[in-house]
Image 1 (cartoon, helix red, strand yellow):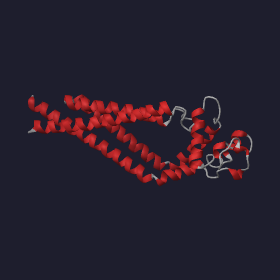
Image 2 (cartoon, rainbow, N blue to C red; image 1 turned 135 degrees about the vertical axis):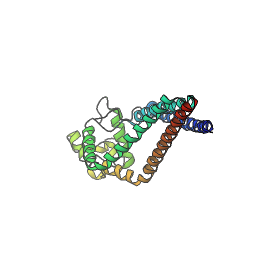
Image 3 (cartoon, one colour; image 1 turned 90 degrees about the vertical axis):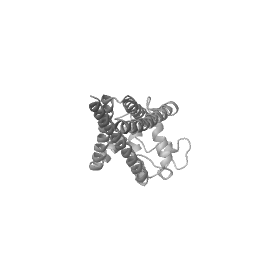
Image 4 (cartoon, rainbow, N blue to C red; image 1 turned 135 degrees about the horizontal axis):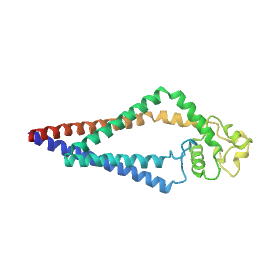
Length: 238
């Protein structure tokens, strides 16, 4: 009876981790595709220049694949060490995510102030050699969200030391339109505009976060259940 339960949990955990591993492959593939096709699109942050969407997806995908692989091998081999490693790794990830979420909501105001200061520093790198990614990122953000600057279009005045903005701030794009009067530019601040867009899509973000947490809890349950079953089976055989 115990052996039958162990076999059931074993195949369930193997199937779960196979899907987990395939999910990691998908995330890694998207990250590599973004890096290859959108290589000139990077982060807006001057403090974390490597924190681009492509790099985040590549690191996340590789990590998910590694955890899924350990879980698959641990399940099929009924290896206590690998099962425990999988459980501890997944638990640490779950706790880290919980801590980051709590800290984010606890220090929202400070994070807002720091983010705006960092973005304003990044404006000074716009159009400079070696910062094509940041330049393209700002151009896309301002064009798609119909905004200009971090907190105001005057943020660009400090960058250029003149009353002008990038052409991506213009209501109607044309060459050197950023030299025209302020009446021809977008007035909305990009930081608040993007923040409002995220708040409008908060439900989707929340559902995604909840599904992620449930998947992780399911993985932890499978790992601990199988670990206990293997220990019991080994004790019984001994």
